[in-house]
Length: 361
Image (cartoon, rainbow, N blue to C red; front, side, top):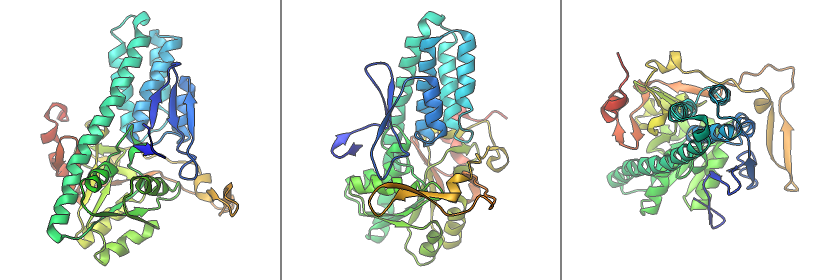
């Protein structure tokens, strides 16, 4: 996608053997990039959310392993790098998927072959992510087109968190569908949840504004009200992990949107590339680990002051206890459909699209 007329991916290799990322902590107030040269740099970028979004985390981890192989490509280092990168964030399954794929590709090779092979494999994973998201967008745009055909009115989509191109290598998941519908001339308007505490909805608004998509930023608790009054045609979110039966782990607050959607008869969809599906988990509510993040994210708000300078404001005292779960799980029974690169399917029918990955009994 483009920023100020220049095409960017969210992560890209540099000629000097490092990787460059868009530092998402600066957005939407400033556009900045950051160079990652070591495995430790990648781990820090993932933990601090300079890199965020399940697909992008997986790609970054793959490159992190490739960077580690340049210093020591022996079996102990391969195992250690796999473990350290895998521990950087717990909920997004793409992280483990990418690292396991890298390890499987490298283990059969002699250590002298691993550095170059690791870089090639990480690049393949990055390029595949772009194509997966492009395909998800085509299928998701079909949902928006059909909604427009029913009413001949602009389609109002509500989304939660940021599932755009900066959460992936390019295109995005949920926003890929919105971009492709908009580009095809389908009138679409997006209700953008602010998504506290890290305000990732501001990233969605920044993306949509750059692409010229009509949108309105709303507080997280406004979604149900809008649905009650007929102002939402469908809910479309991304995911960090989806169970084999279709339970959806996404940014905290997604479950409440799904409950409101069910009560008001609004369809609820999750846009999910296949690496986000965890075929080893049946019961998402019981088995998906939920990351608990630091209290400062809740106690403080960052933005720009009256002089347009970066500023952080404390809104709660340290004497107040804070709980900060980063994700929740929406049960499959509340999900209308899962949008994948292979099509749209009801949650219980995921395995029909991916028979090769069906969870063993």
